[in-house]
Length: 251
Image 1 (cartoon, one colour):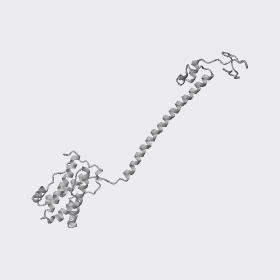
Image 2 (cartoon, rainbow, N blue to C red):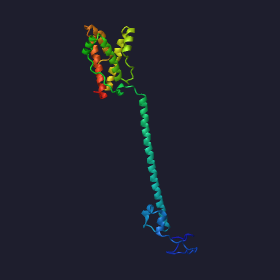
Image 3 (cartoon, rainbow, N blue to C red):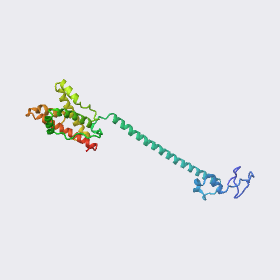
Image 4 (cartoon, one colour):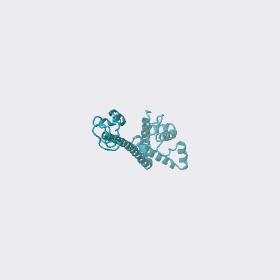
């Protein structure tokens, strides 16, 4: 032990310095030292050292260990920054989705079918068409066109294609074009049904070109071509309308 004032060595247990003659300060009790430095942080050093100057120095070093805890806390804060890095990764995912959405090509197979509450007609047939046209002197043929266009426009809504012309448009433009519009109407109608088959998971075999070939070239087969074309068109329309009804739980 050294003198508190001049630093000269002190005799064992001596209270007065032999060089400067000053009385040394009273030694603090261990409990006071513990209260000063904290029981929790210095618990590891209690009872191991006397509470002389060297002992206090060790306890000060224990305070540095407490500072080490703050460093650990700093690591936790840094871990928080890693969480922030996770948000950056999430932002990257969001940003990565934007170019894909902007540059995506329109795929009708990814467009959900439309919703509805009214079931569509799904039992069209060639034989019934012939019989009703014969009974009504051809008037049913006009009703058939009107209803077919209405049902297909309903079942194919939202596909990005223009609506199929109704009965008035069909009659008017067919007269103005000497029947050419009726062929275009049939072509567009069947192409739209074939394209929308992917939305409903239905396989439509014939498109507009196939139907027109049966109606024109097939007419040379004893006049059966137009009948075959009508049969195929009814079949395609029934498939689309039935899929629409199932999708909306209308069956």
